[in-house]
Amino acid sequence: MLDLKIMELVTPEDRPRDDRPFFAVHPDTLYPTMLEYIQAALAGDIQPIPARCRQFLIMARGIDPAAWRLATTPYSEAKESLIDTEMRLRGAALEICRRWFTTALHEEHNDEPLGLHILAGDKEWRT
Image (cartoon, rainbow, N blue to C red; front, side, top):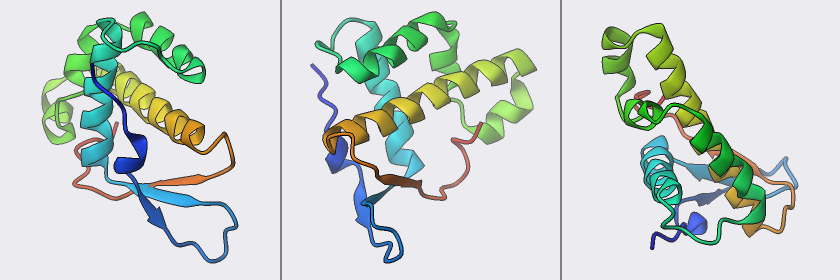
């Protein structure tokens, strides 16, 4: 069973003007981890799904299964080879990944306000 250890994926970020905790994550960490986790959840290999994250499992089940394969396609390749419908599916899958990750991070902090900075990467995960 795959365990999402959210705090091992982020690093604290010092924001002196912000009174809430801030965390940073690299897109090359966030997206592959969440894609693997969501695939396991869709297969029923992750139980139980935290209550606040169940909405994302429902969303993940509701989109075309091809979206998860398309989400692994690097942006530079996708923009050249995918049609608009496929790009939207890819974007929907990546958005579910981001939202699920952010919600899981909030749950780790008892739903207290916090910030998440997705670091600039090589842009291959953009939608």
